[in-house]
Image (cartoon, rainbow over all chains, first blue to last red; front, side, top):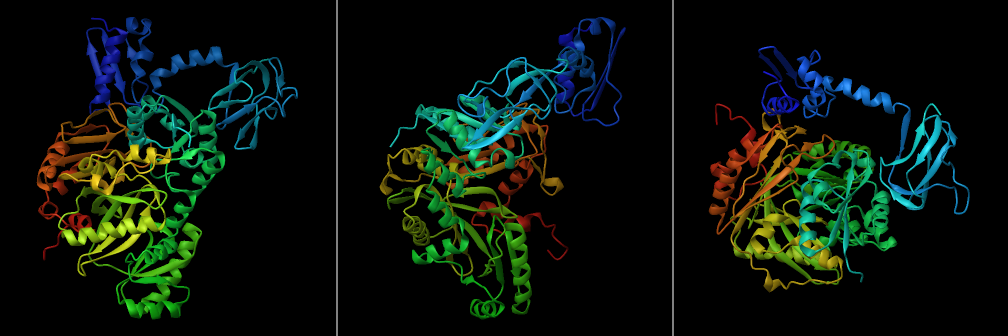
Length: 167
Length: 453
């Protein structure tokens, strides 16, 4: 008996819809234990079968389970993703408004691609009903990409620009 | 008057979904302003576009007037629909809209101010020859005692800035009044930033009956019948119905006329509700307040009149005026609504936020469900716990009640606790079935009976 990633996802879904907090499944040679993210004092759930693990099923198994908390089983995958992107920091809009790259029309922009920034460096202005709010980098590094266009509405949380922390 | 082609909806939950439905039918584009917690909500999927206005906390998102208006201008919306709650009755939003040339789908800022101040609203009611609860403003202990002697106990001390049950104190004896007033005033000052209080007669057995009105803003007002919302727990309405059971035709006519008179006095624009307290023992009614917005319980009125109130709100805001005459309103049958909340009746109705793993809503020709909740939906802890409204319509009250009972029984919700068991209990209760319960009904139902009955 082998479990595919899809099987594990399906089992996880069944657990999630049940009233149980924990599921332990043993088929010949396959041991699977799942625990809800919210259950207390839970040891890390593990999918203990080499073929399953190799098939990359761990993230699939954990993804639907109580996404409001980070399911422990998802951590290895997240770490892997984080490692490659650890250097790049997204500077997000702290509020909704109109984004301006320069202090006034015609003036040079606060930052360009390649600019070095410190935490306190002003990278732009977000205007809300004529009220100007300065936006700071919040991180030290080099600007690698500017996503928000000048004079355009940005939403809360929208990525304005990206900073490489290693320069 | 500019045509409305795109509306920014400054709200969330079932009312956002409800407004989107009507906009769609009218061919109007919708932009939903959401907090970060509601980005993946059902209304966010239903809207033509969403715009994230801030973090989950309402104070940082749904309550930010400047942000909402900036968002509307930024996305090219001609109008803002505020729904209910949040900014719907904040004169500041209506005023900023007026200044910025954005159509506010609701009354004028001045009208919101007129009804938002309880003493002012009371004075307007008296000027419109609408009865008010005996009482008045008190600015000294001596004045309070003089007034109290005229009214007779029990009394109710109310904060001018309060509402929804907050800032109210019952006083049974005249001697207790000076102390209670002092306490109420300092509490009101701390809670509402307004220390003014007023004194009223406490109505021992009251019913909550309200009149739905539509006004064109130029003095023409019609009513769309009344609603009875007496099934309340701690001033929160749980079940609403129309028509109000057990009123004589003459009494009903008087209360509807009073609602229209009040709204006409203000040259009221848009949809609004004039709330009355019906004093069961004295066979009288008194003006309570006016709600200058669409209300949660509007669907029961829609069920019996066939009028889409949100569509009328939009038409009035767009300058089309009142498209209906009073003669066009011919209520048919009865309708009852229950509010399904993520609250656990077994735990004193504590909110029960979380993820709804599975839900199955009832359906049928005489059943309407207004909701933003499907299987997998989240109920964030930041907002109110309303999940859905189940509305049943029938040729008479008994038929509507039977359909609602079946609909409630057919509803399945897993993952969060809900007040469905409470609704099943009320709908099966003999006193409720007989009709015309007073606002003390729920408290009596929930109080364990002692051995003396």
